[in-house]
Image (cartoon, rainbow, N blue to C red; front, side):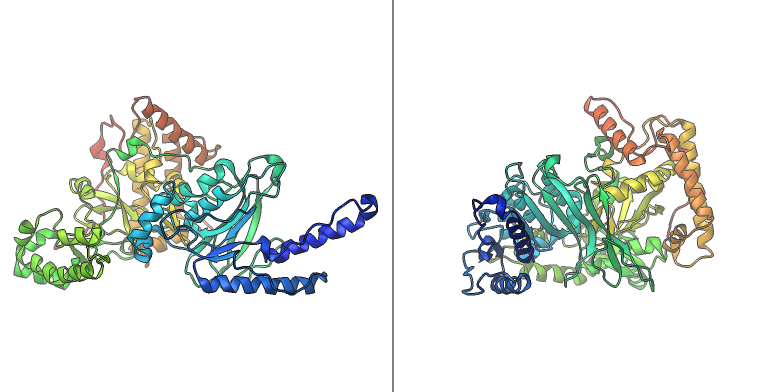
Length: 608
């Protein structure tokens, strides 16, 4: 496609030259023909490389027929030196690959998340990759290495070479977020400009991922850039609805179409909204830690049914001390039947765990054999255990990630705040500290109604959807990017704190009353907020949002994201000067803290 487009441009140039031939009086030399020799490429798949060579020759013949040009179709170009079968990042010696010099780079790098790199390529390759490209964060997606390498390899676009320094790459949707954004797009916009982008769309190929596309120019000179940027976005198609094609509308699938809007800028999150990527973590939010991901069991043998729990306790009543009700993300938003339990020895050593006879025997029978087998199968070529297998074997009776730091915070509390880890709108609930949260739950170490109000407010939701991690079309609550950077009200009065707490209690009262008559749980209830018309829950949220804005001292007439971003910077500056700042939770000096901790929470039956 690139070859054919450039040949059309070349044909147009020749037409213009012919139009001014009399003025040139023969002094204008004819441009040399663009050929397949002007193109270079790398692919790790040798078949793909051979296919590319054939495709270029087909394109050559198509152009001759389409444009009626006089170039000879034969002999075919020899592209063996242009199209190379090789890893595009590393040489066999583990050094960075030197890409061919080019004015324009386009590509479709492989889609692979950071957590899949070692399972797919092995630790030796990943260690060499990170050594060769130390500026790319270890948790960045694989495709980010291509973004960064493409930008670094490009020549700058300058007034003397205005067509150079251009690139367009497809990446996972995660290139807009967190470590992946830092490693790629943040680096690109330091001396480049994103001129066209697709926020996210389902990939048209076999891979089950959502992708983003970024086109950029390696310059920030406004004279060399288009006046307006073009930002493509996905238009959701409702069931049975046919979205009419509009001017500028992109390719469609059964479920969506792409449309675009013109923008003055596109930031490194591939958005034209306020860029909050510069908001850094606030020490008052991170020390002490109050936001955690729930427990990751690591083996299904730690999860018990009601019957299995009862059987273990009947053999040894002490087993009840290490078996806890278990809550995952779906349960929190739909049904709250406590019919699953987690067997958690916490940080007990092997001898301490063995004292719980029936529970210890259960783990030894149902967990240990699998961990030994996986460790044996996962040995490297020298017969050594992988580090994570070695660690799991050393404490095989414990959960893979039991989150002791989280337990130390929530166990002393009567209840803690939680929301689903994967969610487009965090719905916060109080959960009894007797209940253990799964890794699909985001946990907040607060028991007070004021903290619920701040986290459930529109201000926090807006910060979340702007800062959160995204995979496909799913939003993930990232403590590092969302909670750690979110500034809380810095000087609320006692009356303002009480108003936020009261508004939050009213929301939970309406929820509890409605759920006794409504199926589908909180998820179904909150979907009613998307419908037109009056809604008691919608009105209660509006009252909460107004109370929270007052606590912040923000104006409803100003852009909320801008105010939050400015507050983040202000708090960071104060802390850097050694001054105090108001941390998450109840502000210091609140005299009636006990009155701000009500009793409602999700709790298992008393018999459990």
